[in-house]
Length: 506
Image 1: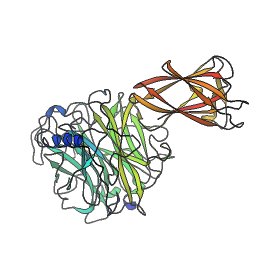
Image 2: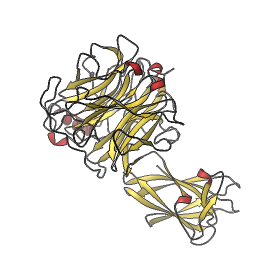
Image 3: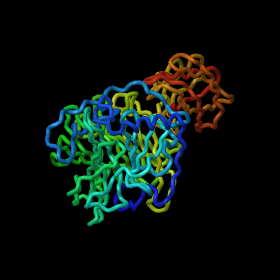
Image 4: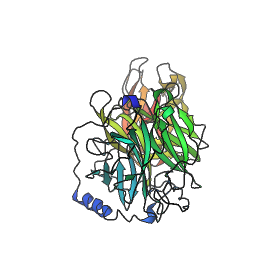
């Protein structure tokens, strides 16, 4: 979200938006949740203090407010991930759960209802939506989640909200947001409070919470809480030449800074334009920092992640993007600005994608939700492809690694020309369910070939491999049910020949 590339209402401009219909039952569930807004269940708060909880995000103290002085007890760490619960009918991880004007989303849970917050829309400084489950159905609330802007801020530039629920027994919700200063061309970060997750949030007046004028300002606030209760705020410095992700410690109430900021991540070679939109969790004994790279209004916008043993780094970046337009085959464009929601049934990744280009840097972005699984500290997102090279799998019978310049990584497994030739590929599923399995192969023989595909040694099914020209590769896709966690995908020759380049699971 580089300042010089963004204009007012960049999440959509002054256009209308469609609201998806909600079933009568879902509406009753939402209304039931709204009835308890001012008295959220203390037992729902988790690691970061988010009711429901949200991974590693901080919670304000009981009764915290701008004038609070007593020292709070440290929030509780987030629980381990469990099986994923209810999924709304018609839901898909590659279809928006909120179709229009809901950029930079963040989600919390209160009293059994989920609340989503987004960057300014045509009719709200901070739009708010509710749902009975992370996958929906989602309904926008009328009005504005932000009561007003602080005296230092100008309207039309309120981006990337971060809402943090109270700790158990508390009543005060915190909101971190970025807004344009009214005395200069620069974004800064402010803080607001509310006794309801629906708002309205009232900002603290005075100076912004974070405003590094020498670095072009700051945007994209994200909160994190350590196991000892220490609160942190992450943000991106906004001048393009100095764009980087910073970390700063907060006071116990989350309303003030408690130390100097530290630069923890910058743009690396091969990454587009700049880095922004941080989100930090702790998984697999490591700190996992999600971030976006590129222009938010372009299809090259993508989500990446880096891992560290210490919260201040150094962070080691994973190779390539986790989410990208190409990875989704164009079904989701510019996936980025992610938010990890740690629910009682497991983790979800909340993010936005481009729905419509409106000219220049103005785009209409919708909200997406996908199940998020963990192979240690490696995130795996439902609906996003994960590739497994065949030559690195367990090769049985006559299958061996082969040098193939046109194959992925320059190698493949084969040839499967004799009885008993097979490949056993270990694949990871974030949650149990039906997955699309794409097998990249070549069949340079004179006849069609067939494989037998099994999952965990069961449910065999044949797969035909058509002939391909010498040196060329193609793919075949099958649907298979996978268990949560690691699975063994077996590819065994039935007849004919062929070589396997890779398996891709989404």
